Length: 113
Length: 116
Image (cartoon, each protein chain N blue to C red):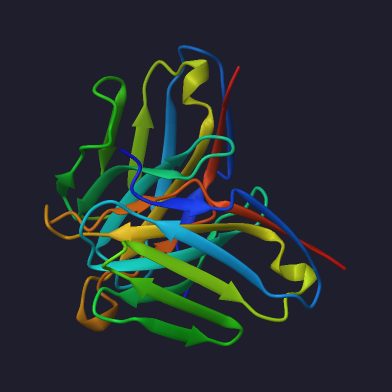
């Protein structure tokens, strides 16, 4: 079954506002990662948070992880039109020795200038 | 340091033909992953390879799909006798699996396969 599920599926905000996206997952993880994908392009790695971490910052990005609730959130502050993209969370678990990433369906963010 | 390279970027095949997708990992990376993305969907894991070994192919369809990562040269994802349902974007990712960044995967730009 799908591991990561992002919420909302689509989000439209004005430039300068903050955008919050949520991700829930079902099983144990080693880490959770957030990626951005511009339309028709490849994935850009944004941030990785390990299972023993609760919060991480990178520039205008803030990620939280709550392993008791099996959920994570990505906050983009002071959004820009260039932030318009799809955002995916992906969980990694090494239990099977594979280290594969399991992706959600993504949140499509539109930032209106 | 060049990133993950994939070619071709776009591939059009008629039903029944073979598709070969190539992936060159980042320099120093010896672990390659293949993912498939259908329109409006997230990426789905297909296969994980190290040099000359398939480690996990649990996401690969049972028929027509195969992957290799030879000692020399790029990793190849091969789809035989393609069908319309194979139309998707295929992404390759690589990692070095050492130290604190062991789970960070770096993605290539993808190959968009269209089956007509």
